[in-house]
Structures are given as C-alpha cells and as structure tokens.
Length: 243
Ligand SMILES: C[S@@+](CC[C@H](N)C(=O)[O-])C[C@H]1O[C@@H](n2cnc3c(N)ncnc32)[C@H](O)[C@@H]1O
Image (cartoon, rainbow, N blue to C red; front, side, top):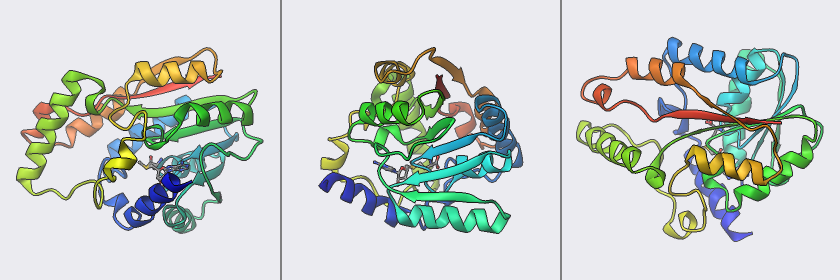
C-alpha cells in the first residue's frame, strides 16, 4: 500500500532525531517518574504480555519492561525499532520487536497499548478492531493528547506555543512535515480529541471504555517550562482504557 510506504519512509528518516524532542523522550526525572506512575496504573499487574503498537523508539515499551512486563514492540519503521532495540540493550531489557503495520498485530497478549499512533493511521478503526481480535480478553490502553484542530481552544494554544518556540529558535519535533496528500488521508491527521478516540474504540468493539487524564504528566511537564511557555500550559494528555 503506497501510503504506508510513504509513512514508513517518513519515520525511518525521523528516527535519527525523534528522541531529541522533550515531548517524545523527556529527560526530566520528574516527568519520567510521572509517566512511569501513569503506566503502572494503566497496565495490569506485572508480568503481563504487552503489545506496544507503533512503539517507535520505545518510550512506552521501555517503561513497561522496567515495570516487569513482557513487551513486544510493533512498528512500521525498522529504523525506529532499531533505536528501540539499542535503548533496550543499553538497559539490559529484553523487548521483542516486530516490524509491520498496526492493523496486523501478532496474537497472544494481555494488553495492547499505543502512544501517539492513532493520528497517523489511514484507518484507525481497522487497527482498533484488529487489536480487539488479537486481545479478546485483554485491555486497550490508548494514550493520546488533545492537539490540533480537534478543539478550538487547544488549536489556539498550540498555535501560540509554536509561535513562541519558533521565535526562540527551538528545533521542530520532526525532521519535516508529513506530505499534504498523506496527512489528508488520515482521519485523525488534524488532531485527536478524547471524544473521537473513545468513540472509535467503542465502535471497534472495546467495552467498558474509561477516560483517564494524565494530570501528573502534564503538571511535571509544565514545571519544566520557561516563560512564556509555562503560562501557555501543555497539551492535555489522556488515555482511553477499555476491555
Ligand atoms: C509519533 S510516533 C510514536 C512513537 C511512540 N509510540 C512514542 O510514544 O514515542 C508514531 C510511530 O508510529 C509508527 N507508525 C506509523 N504508522 C504505522 C502503522 N500503520 N503501523 C505501525 N506503526 C506505524 C511510526 O513508525 C512511529 O514510530
């Protein structure tokens, strides 16, 4: 499928610098600790069999493995997975990697989790349905944030934030933008809203959906900001958890 080839190329190119963005890989111990606490609360007791879809360089996979889970990382991009494997090896963590598309998950897991994958899927509903089938008695943990045009206030905040960052000369989060024809083919390509993510999960057959706001992650991230960014606040982060 041509669009998946384009997306794979983008992330293969992005792998070199992806972890430089604090939003992708925070260096603050407090932010890291908040993420660890959040994931410990969202996942079942360790050791569980956890599939991290669109695992990238392994932000969630590494935390879950440190918590004692048996983690498999699935991603379209071999270069992102190579970064993940190197980071896991550096910590002596055993994380299996599977190159492939999110809508073709391997079976046999207790949990499917993802962070910031849904926006870049041409058919996020199909992936959520495939995960449901791969984890018939398990749990979904979909971690997203409210960004983009999905909410007018957030869109304004995001624009102000980007303006300040550009004035400051901060390097962008990615090596470049998605090609317009790729972004135009992504149903969540202009933003993820908790309403849309929850609706998609329920329509895909996930039950008992709960919405969890990741406030400690937001708070610790805010404390790291300089002015004026600190006044602008940070992107609201949330998880949709379902069974
Ligand atoms: C924004 S990054 C998120 C990475 C990681 N989950 C994190 O939280 O840092 C999106 C990731 O999804 C992967 N990806 C994009 N489309 C995919 C697809 N159709 N199937 C599997 N992975 C995909 C990309 O290669 C990239 O690693």
